[in-house]
Image 1 (spheres, rainbow, N blue to C red):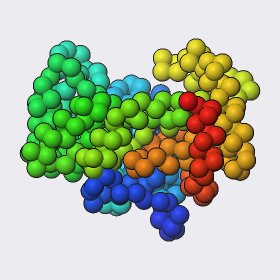
Image 2: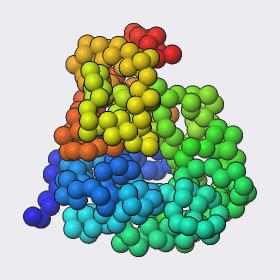
Image 3: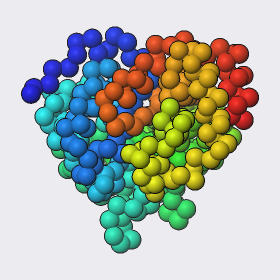
Image 4: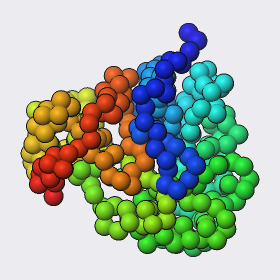
Length: 329
């Protein structure tokens, strides 16, 4: 069936300027880390992509090794894009990354010029694209000189294979150095993608100040703490959940009694606001001045619809912020 996007798709979504740049991102972006790989249901993923775009989500976030198997999320996205979005390329932001292990040997990991450029070339082929809008270095490399990694990002922009560049999981100090190196080359470090949620606030220890000072946008991944900040685990652990499956990224021991008790208390605040816990978690992340967009994952269209409803709620009051802080600090 042919896809005809909703005509009102831009009416309710909020779009925030990404740092000191000309680019705006939707307040909620869609990530393809889980549920988009070769082992997953293609039509379900395709339906989620359509639903997201119909709701005004214009930013789709991938990486070279998303799957499993590695590369398959980009391959599937490329198939979906060709079927449904080929005429809409200029209405969407597509990002990818490299920095974690992708192929065997010394040239398929971390931050060398060879790895980053080769990886992006592979990603573009998998997705059937001429360029990505944003290309990230996915994690710091303790051995490769930062000048080489940033030089690779400069080369990628100059080549036309990416419009903007970003980094992920960089410390405040490394982010500042990366920004300065790129600035000297006439390139803007557009965005930083850190893990950030009510249970993981490491960016507040210096990084947020750096981002604001340098005019760098921030897109927060794992704003729901991989599902812990949802109603999913408040009463029990479903067998089909990430914790129930005991995946390598989210294990039963991660759901401590302390986190569970805090989640239940936060859920009470959410109820008072007529929100779900997941909606409150998104509202909280977007309440932070430096955050441009919250990057969500999903396993169904219904989850995306529910999360986007968080934008309909009022901003957090000072009283609510204090109540939340008393729980999570």
